[in-house]
Amino acid sequence: MVSRHFWSDIAFFMIIGASALLINSNNKDNLMALSLNKGGNLSLTKTDPNLTKLLIGLGWDERATSGAEFDLDASVFLLNNAGKVRGDHDFIFYNQLKSDNGAVEHTGDNRTGEGDGDDEVIKVNLTQVPADIDKIVVTVTIHDAATRNQNFGQVANAFIRVVNEDTGTEVVRFDLAEDYSVETAMVFGEVYRHNGEWKFRAVGQGYSGGLQAMCQQYGVDI
Image (cartoon, rainbow, N blue to C red; front, side, top):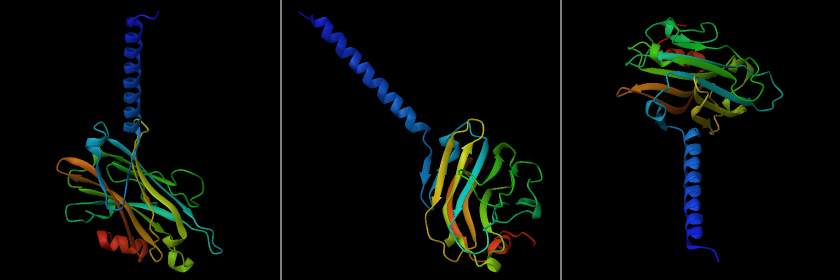
C-alpha cells in the first residue's frame, strides 16, 4: 500500500517543477526583443539598465526589378534641442563615418544590400554622446533615386533594431510595413533623451526629396 507521505512528496515535486517551468518561461520572455509599431517608443534605460553601447542594425531587401541596381545608404543626424545639427560634423554618413568625438560610428556602406541580417550598422556609445545632443536620428536614403527612377515602394522587409553591443541581446526592433511608393528617403528610428533616460522611437517617416531633403530639414550645409 502506497503511503500518504509518498503522495505528498509527489505533489510537492510537481509544484516545484511547475514553478521552475514558469520561472524559465518568464526568463525566456524577458530575453525576447520588443517589437514596436510605427510611432511607438521604448525606454532603453528601463528595459536594459546596463545598456551603454548600442549597435543599431538596419536591413532591407530590394524587390526584383529590371532597372538599375539599388544602393541604399544609412546616415545619422545628431540634433540639439532645436532639432538641428550643431554643424556638419554632426552628420554621419558614408563619407564621414564618425562623429567628432567618436560617440557615433557608421561601420561602412553596403552597396548591394545582399544577404540576411543587418545591411548596415551604426555604433553608438551613449556615455560619450555630448550633453547638448538630444536626439540621434537614423535615416536611410536611396542613392541617385531620381536618375534611376527608384523609391522605397521597391524595397521590402525594411527594419531597424537596437542591440546591446556588450551582451549581443536585441533590445527592440521596428519593421517598416507600409508601402512607401514615392519616398526616396526614410527616417527609420531615433534614439533620444527624455527625463534623464534614453529612449527609442519607431518613426517610419518618408520624404520624397532624398538625402538633400533630409539635410535641409536638419540644417546640414550641402
